[in-house]
Image (cartoon, rainbow, N blue to C red; front, top):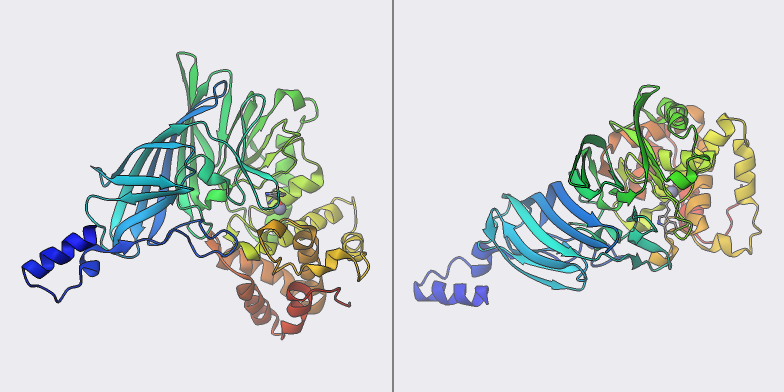
Amino acid sequence: MRRLLALTAAAFISLPLTPAAAQDGTPGAPGAGDPYFPGQGNGGYDTGHYDLALDYEPTSGRLTGVTRISARATQALSSFNLDLVSTLSVRSVTVNGRAAAFAQSGSELVVTPARSLPSGRDFSVVVRYDGRPVHVVDPDGSVDGWIKTSDGVYNANEPQGAMTWYPGNHHMTDKATYRFTVTVPSTRVAVANGDLLAKVSKGGRTTYVWDSREPMASYLATVSIGKFELADSQLGGYRVITAVDPKLAGDATGFPERHAPVLDYFSSIFGPYPYSSTGGIVDHAPEVGYALETQTRPIYPRVPSESLLAHELAHQWFGNSVTPTLWRDIWLNEGFATYSQWLWLDKIGTRTLQDSFDAAYAPAAEDEFWQTPPADPGGPENLFHDPVYDRGAMTLHVLRREVGDAAFFAILRAWASDYKYGNADTAALIALSERVSGKQLDALFEAWLFKPGKPTL
Ligand code: TRP
Ligand code: ZN
């Protein structure tokens, strides 16, 4: 409609040289081009910062939100999309302070600004919305997003839950900094990523302000709510912020103190811890079953074992700071975190690295386990299948044997520093490994990452 009008106007004043589309821009793509989740993310702009104001009432499950996004157009835009499920109702949208037209369908919020946005232009979007968030069920059957618990919310968003509670560009290639201002009844605590800046109580409600200064992919954001015991202390050189469900307080004794030794060890082999604070959220959520490496502050459905703690903390380097470019490359997260877990268990004397490798390698060649190559798991239903974790970790062990310890740890450090706060794919890891080691490694990676079947040693 807009385009037609523009054409008519152009014809009338006889200026046919500039096509209307170039003047007015075109709609941004409704997806980021990831084959596993085609509607996830959007094209035509890049976000820089999210300022989320959330007000949540756990009893009714009602959320009222204001999302402010700073972004830059990467093409001339007549309209652009944000990802948000339609069960939440958008009340208003402004772009650069002016009311914008909007429409919701499926998990897309289409925003048409009063004036189109030239390529390269910085712009701000404010979305006001409310409703009762519900989690989504992933292709593998697990729950994801705003997951209600008996006393609040277990908020884990990998791979697609972010759209269940705030509008954004929800593909991992568009990282941004965040500010969270969350208001809950004073009987509850709201925990998010990064540093706690303020906690203010008034009239039976408490507002928590959290600041996430380092860029973050939206699947790693969390706003978890519950009757938590919150602790914020300086321990071993880290700001450790923990939230523990009182039901688990006994088992969680010493939980804050467990972080520094693991982070010190990983820093010594991967390079400096990339965030300004750490910690974890220990919720009583037996119905969820999985933990998530939410940035700076993983969320656990129970008190984590040493192995799980190491896994989620290793993700802070591998997954969170260095993030894949497509979901298909998820082994770069899970294989690295699993290998790191093996390293930590070896370090503390629980199980040798070789025993971990041997146990993972044990399945017979005919076993289903060997049919899924980790770097090509076949679809979103296999994202978190065992081969992605264990065969991914075995790949790193075999690489280490092939290039030697010095080159192997140089590769890990370079991976963490070259792609810090960014994205990288499997091809980049192979290229880096060959560059650092000076070896031709195609056959090794082909056998371990891409071909079905049990590789020989
Ligand atoms: N990334 C998580 C971890 O390894 C795992 C995870 C996220 C997961 N979503 C999931 C596992 C869904 C099973 C199902 O710590
Ligand atoms: Zn993991």
